[in-house]
Image (tube, rainbow, N blue to C red):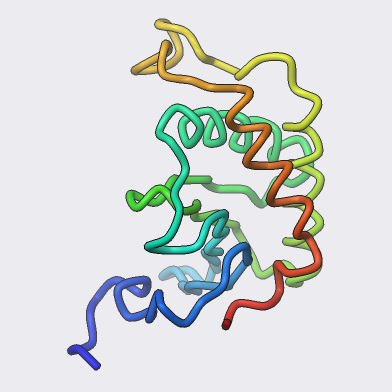
Length: 154
């Protein structure tokens, strides 16, 4: 094993996980006692498959916008640089099943979307770099394996 790193995901042996999954990756207690939790929402198998950048970009927009219709606890939904998934940051400590329900409801919203929100030059830094169809295909695969989300290890 390599030395302990400051970034939680750098300490995760990516050879031992099996995507898709949803994993509690971090929990931070802020100075005034508030809690933030970070979930690793993994769409594809690390070092085997990845999401194309227009798909990642569209999923980021779609999830960030639609998830807030289901929960006030959503702080952020950020893509991983490796293009295999996202980090979902939530305020408080929701039950794991509630997190899965939030993700599932948001994914169902994405499946019925007719456009990517804010995919334009005014609201986005690269408004032309989107793929609604790619995002929906990735979500369809992710939802089809809903029963596997709680199983992280291969």
